[in-house]
Amino acid sequence: MTMDVVLLVIRTIIIGVLLVSGIAKLADREGSAEAMIGFGVPRRLIPLAAFSLPFVEIALATGMIFAATVNWAAIVTTLLFLAFTIGVGRIVLAGENLDCHCFGQLSSGPVSWLTLVRNIVLTLAATFVAWWSWTRKAPSMWDDLSWTDAGIVIIALAFLALGTVIYRLWQTQAALLAQIDELQALIPAGRIRKPPIEESFARVTEGITVTDSDGTAVSVSSLVLKKSPAMLIFISSSCRACNAIMPEIAAWEQEFAGLMPVRVIGIGDAAEIQARAEAAGIDQVYMRETDELATRLKVNGNPTAVLVDHDGFVRAKPMLGGVPIRRAIEELRRQAAG
Image (tube, rainbow, N blue to C red):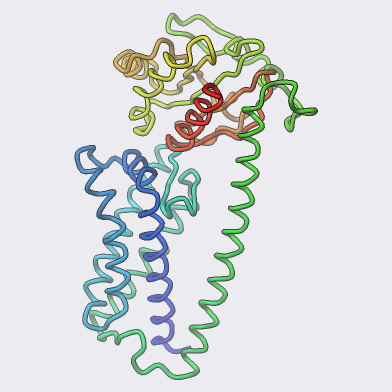
């Protein structure tokens, strides 16, 4: 395989990544804006950034196709990937679990070392294209393309497309199962013969305590009332997205008072969290010292909501990020109205 073919394959992959990312972000503006908050983008710039970034990515993908524009498109793409890599690296090293929304709703999950490695590889690939096009004048995608080269590229893209389809089908199945779990969680007790999770919230959290604003130890199981649903929202003092959702949490506390307790459980700098909670109007924040509670409830990031149903079972998977939490709140509103 010649270097020209290698370059062609790399350019094609980068174009595909940029196009998928840009188009997916167009359909998930809310999630992209929330992710930008977590990445530390200044709030006044977020509306403009959330609007323009998808078009920038699509424009860069187009620029990577043509010989006249591939050089500058590759340089800007390298800088864009580098900025993403630095942001992801900061979040991973700081231990902040953030819902990435790198590919909109096509791929949702906490930023991890795998995300960092992927971004490093993409940055190096874009750097290679920029170097090659700067020193050797990279042609347009279809220039001097032999049938053999075209076959190699097609096979490479076919494997990439097949892997993407398989991954997407797996994600779709996981999302459908999660939606089923969420719907089951909203069904009143007694309507389901057997809970999908065999252990109750009280048993899962047995022996774990948190502290209230006065420093008094409180049993986690006591945060849930009998015969009443409850929502536990996990936040962190180092989580920017948590700060953004705090005013909404305060409003939900008031809205669902008497119907569903909304409990806020924080970790990190207690004084900082308490100050932010008071400013937002949140009544009470319970602090945890370790990750044991999060581990037992399978909470992998912040903010995350855990919904406990009427008979004390955790039927739904934890909801990571403001967008899934807001959707759950909307569904609860519809249930209450109906």
